Length: 319
Image: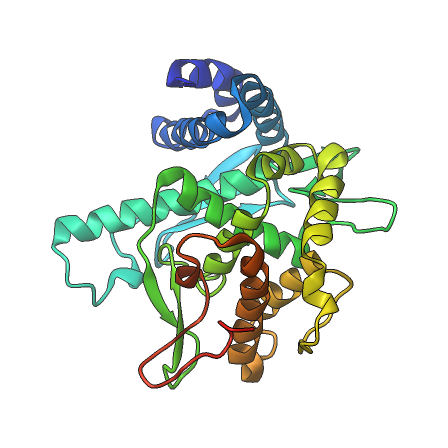
């Protein structure tokens, strides 16, 4: 088990350079403590410590400043790549808790939990940004390869990693609130989200399910060292599930392989690209995973895909 003393010692130079106050140090140390101890049983102690060194290096390169935003209306945490600054704000007023029939103390706990998730998510994105000669060469397992798959930081592949980072944070902190999110105005269909999420509520369930179909150890290797492992991870996935595209079902969206097709659906839903077809995107994404699950039989599979409310039966289970 990686202890907080080791983590603090590794971060001491960084803390000195950024002149962090105790409030922020707690979040940085706690993030690494939660992440490393979640990863260690999966990747092994030596690999975990090697990955930690790379995470610290990336954080030192990517977050030069922490800046408190003045008079913001809610809790807030967002990394600004151009200025290499993590901007944040903490308040007892959090609009997403309004209407929640909880005591004042419980509402404060909800606010603290959500702020922690926000901070952790930004940290998780930052430690996976690899810079060389002032150029982003990788953002998670997306990297500039021979086919030109370049991860423009403000582009759509970064949006995918934003989803994965939020799922990662819920996994390492054990947050699993199962909040019901209706995807249509008539409330005919819904998905579950692990926690209150402004941007990823409709897609977190799918990203968490997707990770269950990817070798977990290989996933961490690919994110931490994409030049060596990402191509293998994606090729292995497409090889195992290529039958999804070789069947008779005609998907509304298209792409060259199953991995990219799942990305396409996730991004259309997350970015609200075509709201009129949103329910169909959800249903077809659930169909893709249902096809894949015929080979894997994931536990509690139905918890992760689209649900129909009373009287609205979904037809993807038997495909």
